[in-house]
Image (cartoon, rainbow, N blue to C red; front, side, top):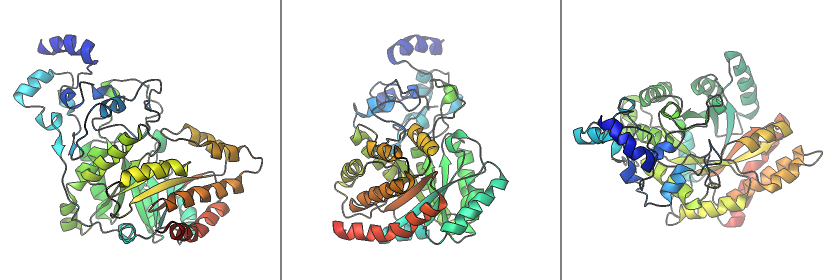
Length: 416
């Protein structure tokens, strides 16, 4: 009865989605569950021009919220309790059933617990780092491709990102791919997406990875699944978002240290092209307070935009270590370029489009990538993350061969 009355009132007023653990008082009376992903801690990285990644003709719910409220960067909303869906939030409030998921929870300051990976040590020393992305194959036979790639690049990269279920396409676990990477003496950065598992499942998988020696992790909310209808309802809400993942692992760092002798190096994603820019900056500050130690950006196609964003991010923190790694696309195929253009949250600058109009574009595209890399390095990047979009192996090798020397020159010229 109370639930039905509540729907009659809150539905028309707030477009209530009946989560049963209402946080309207923390979101300026805008229901965040109108985000198709059901995010409770701010916008995802796919937001461009203030629009929703999933339903682009709609304004992003969290952009509306965050431009109307002061953001407390030292709290996090935990994943909603599914057992409370379609129950009366007023009853849950008075009985206290929703207390943990309704109220913002304080983040845990474990900054004194130092990460143990070689990648972490290099970044905190201020070394320029180079990382490469390798998608996990769909079947075990595809690990031969990973083996061949690693045989070519092992001596040129500091770490390799291993993705899983990229774009929602089922694949092997990122941990399996990471084992191939480790066999070549290179650390992996294992990616997990909040859309893929509950908190319990997620923590079990992280613990499995740590138990066999992996130390670097990148926690992402994740893109929309391709076969899922673009709508707003409880069935589409992701089990976790990236901030919740970061918080869940960060609060256990002392236990990892004591039980495993390993302290995970926690990474997150960031998007310099998401607007309003101040919301993007604040979102990364939230992740930092929750426990993220480093970030990798969405693909950078305009170094000047990155410079403005990074300047805002570093304001008041100029003496702290530089821990942001911009992603640089290496585009060697028109088909792969079309994929890049369709990726959520990726802004494709006219300068790259102009290169791709050339009849013989691969070498000019490599030169363009060097220019972007040098531009972000002059403006404080901790390194670069190479994302391959169809570039031939010889040109990828050329990029990896030259990028460190070019970075030293760029840093020296910028007085860094």
